[in-house]
Length: 88
Ligand code: HEC
Image (cartoon, rainbow, N blue to C red):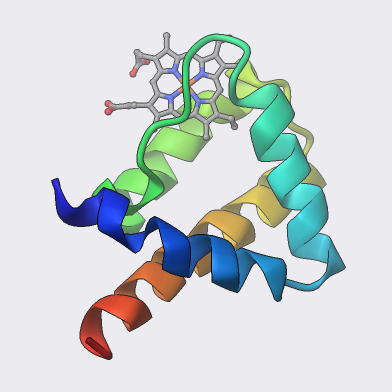
């Protein structure tokens, strides 16, 4: 799947993210890998993520603020992927 080709762009973008995103990424890299490996963020659309993250919120024991931050972070990753896809 072509998604792995997008990774250099994603990491480049992530390096420029503000502090809130860095905190959310840390959440993502600690809480979301307790039960399974990371899934490819970009294969799920906005609706799918909304449903999914709601399900994972309890599993990862996220409070409302963490849920909001993570939701924003995942959205910014998807948007970065979308941008790099359309600018090439
Ligand atoms: C307590 C264990 C647990 C934690 C913590 C957890 N997950 Fe999951 N996750 C699961 C299980 C079990 C499934 C597969 C069954 C399901 O869909 O409910 C799953 C499935 C998924 C899927 C694939 C769903 C699909 O249908 O393709 C994604 C994406 C995902 N998790 C993301 C996350 C994210 C993001 C976090 C952190 C907020 C997280 N998970 C934390 C247990 C967990």
